[in-house]
Length: 240
Image: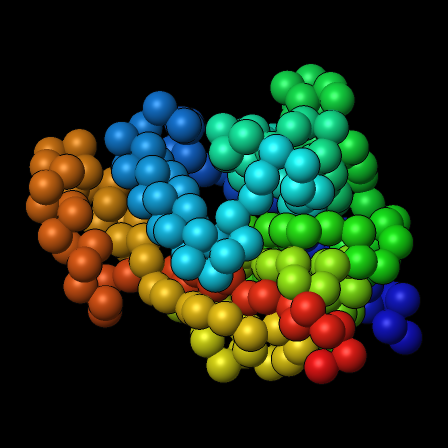
């Protein structure tokens, strides 16, 4: 039963990815769009601050993993932080997206597959990244399987960097927001800080091209933030 549920979720997510790519307005998520640049800059800055505060900011020799890296994900950010591309691994469900990332980072270990079965040994990574992944997974049991696998491959003292929607999208029933309590429940063996960020995308797309100052002020209002960022650390004594 669970295998059928896993396969069904994977097929649904791939179909939804294709629908969004073919039906979304052209360039909506392009990296050169002002609102996209605004959002990415904010999340990268906060991630760096939170990782440093937790004492887990990656070094050149850190082994890092991203689940659902898409066409580049956080892989480029890891490179900018000084992580060697040979120490970067990733798993992506969509073969076409993975192929694009491989062309950009040919020395990284980027694989295609389903995260319910991560093809790496226990305690392999210093940092694992889950970014806008779990909100696309609607089956609770599949979410927990992936969370368990991510926890398994983290080294004692290693950390999870989480970024995802905390609210539902009333116009898109193919995603479901994940709130603080559920993040904690998914990763009961990890502990750390969770913060809200990211100005609601419809507002960001309207306001950022007109005034970044106004967008910055609005993004400081908690009710207008749509995402959560977490840095959750695995105990150094993994039996804790």
